[in-house]
Each structure stands twice: as C-alpha cells, then as structure tokens.
Image (cartoon, rainbow, N blue to C red; front, top):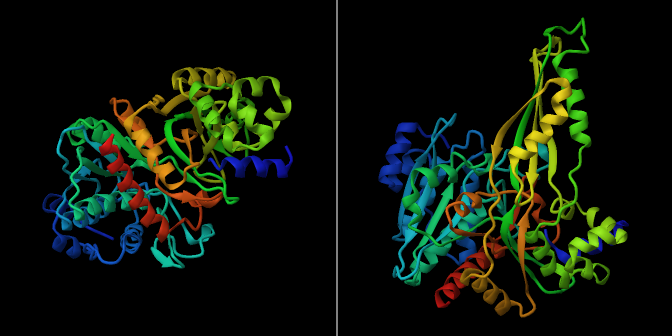
Length: 492
C-alpha cells in the first residue's frame, strides 16, 4: 500500500522520595498528612481552582514520585493519593503489597465513595507504576520533574497511567463535593506492578483481598479512549472489551564454557542464534476472531470508501480481496489484530566479552488472539527449538476473557458520547496489548478499558516513549465526562 493510502486508512479510523519501610507501614495504617510530610512526601494540595488546575497540580506531583518498575516503590505515592481522598472526607486506605526489591515499599490505594447500595459497585482502576525514562531517550525535559507548561503536564506516567489515576481520584472528590449519592458505591483502586504483568499488584489484590471489590459489577480502566478526526468527522469512542493475552517465554541453550580466544561453534550463544532464526521467521496464519470482526464492523463508517466494505466483512475481505489485504496488513496496528504475534525482546549470554558462557537465553513476548492458549503456543515454539536441544519455559500467561457490550454501562457511555457528538461512533475495541482488566474479568466483573481522553493521531506515542504529556483541558474534560457517565449509569 502506498504511504498516501496508508495515511488515509489510519486517519479515517483513528484507532488505535525516600521513606524507611517501617515509617511507610505506619503511614499506611494512620494515613495522616503529617507523617507523609515527615517522610519526604508533599502534603495534599489545596483543592482550589477549576478541575483542570487541580488535576494538573496533583498529576505533576504524582509524576515526581519515581515509581519505575522494577522496583516500583509505589508506597509513598499510594499514601499521597490516600491523603488527598481523605481530605475530601472519603474513606481511603493504603494496602501494602508484596515489595520485592523495593526499599520503600509497594502498595495500592483503595477508596470508597458510598452509594445507596441498591446496585452493585463500580470500580475505577488505574496503576501507580511506570516504565523507565531518561532525558537521554529524547525527552525535552526531565521525565520526573512533573513539568507544567503551555497547558500541558509533561512527564513519565502523564498518560500511562498516573493521569488516569488523577481523573479517577477527582471523579470521587467531585461527586463528594456535589454531595451526589449514586445507587452504586464508586471504588477507587490504583495498584502497583501493572507494567510487569500485575501479579504483585492487581492480581495479588484480587486473590488476597477480594472483599475490597465489594461484589462489584463493573470496572473501568485503561485501554480505550476517544479518537478525534482532524478533518472534523465523528468521534470514535473506543471501549476495550477484550485484549490479546500475553505468552512470555524463555528459550535457553547450553554449551561448553571456555575462553573466547578458542571459539566453539557448539557453544551456547551460537546455538541460541541458530535456535532463534526459525522462530524469528515463523509467522502465524491470519485469523479473524469474532471480537475483532465486530470491532472493524463498528469502524466501517469511519473508513475510506475503498475500505468500508472490507471493514464490514473482514474475514471475506482478507481471504479474497488482495488489494484490501495488502492495505490492511501494511498497518501494524491492524495486522496485530488478525494473527498471533511474537517479538524477541531480551538476550542473555556471557558476563564478559572474553568469556564463552555455559548458557545463553532469549525472552520472547507473544500476544495471542482471544481463544489462544499459551501452552499450545509454547509447544509449537519448542518444536522449532528442538533441533538445538533448547529448553522453552513459560514465564507469564493469562487467558483472554471478553466482556459483553449489551450492558447498562456500555449504553451509558454511548449516551454520553452522543450527547456530546450526535454522530459519535461506539467501537468495542480489542487491544493488542494487555491490561490488569483480565484479573477482574476472570472473577466475573464486566471490565471495560475506557479513558475519557480526547486524542488525535500520534498523541498516544508518548506512552512508553519520550515527552509523554496530557493537556490540562483533557484532564478537566476527563473528570467531567466520567462523572456524567456514572450519573447516566445511575439512571439506567
């Protein structure tokens, strides 16, 4: 597909502080602002100015907590958020979680805004940890300075996902300020460890403290959003209802160790390279699962005229329309949704340049379409690795579970969308990545990935990249929109 055609298809759819551990545990129990300040944290900011200004100030401070995972160190940030919630009269608790190598402690923050209890609760889920960032990676500012300039908050976590946590937090405080009492309890939950798979964060909480969910019916978290057509077309309100599941593998080879001055073709590293070559060349067949077919049917009205029918009938178009298939598969974001994918992400060998190691290994990150099983995928990879005697180990695997779209919450989001833009298109999205939502879907909770954030093409690139940022306007609109959705859900 030509670069011009590629651009048309994309734009039309628009998808896609140190604290001693003992002090921190005392803070987790007492939750008092004085202890927080003694331990190097900032006290809760005064809730002044409009929602955007409040959100920008809280987010800027949250970014200054270096919660890079590993080790995470989310405990102080959890306490900071809890302090803000308590200052608004909201019951908030810091929940210590497994700390691993963290020296200041890891934690989640949980809060509850009571409703009348006539309907089951809804959970607003975000995460406190972030991926690494360095000025040398291309940032224009210190990624942990929490800079506010030009109507934007810039820093690691602004989008993923401290900005979302702040929107959730201020949704509770705004409802409390208005003295709005909904039929449902609204539960705020911000967890550690999402960036490393969530096993020591949301996964641990679901297993160790299921009572914190209060029998919730619904959950909103990261994953979807509101895509804006720069040409003035209708907005696409994307609600993630499913996601590909991770299948993380380790492939290891053994060989004779020795000095590198006497190389051996049968050493561990050459054997690993030979093992990885057929794995690298392997490509899964195209497969359109029902969730993906539904997603592209929803996107069809936004597609260029030449692609609309292909989106509406994706299985047949990929099978029989060569021109459409070429255009579609040239978009990596689309191609990843119609086949299982695999990336070689880490290589490990000798400790020094002049040492031939006894073992070499590689980490593989596979993402499987809904219905795929990591166990079956690992067997296939093991067969490719067998000639070299390599061992294949599963490091992380989750099942892919989808949430239904015929629910009062989905309809409430649609109602708010069309109140803002009568032509808005609802898109039940499938994520190529994964979030913590699956932990809750596995427990019967209807979980949607939806961030009330308006974005144009390219604005999502700051996620895990340099100059991650969010506008103050987006933060304010995010709180207002989420409040409106919760109020609309209450009327359903």
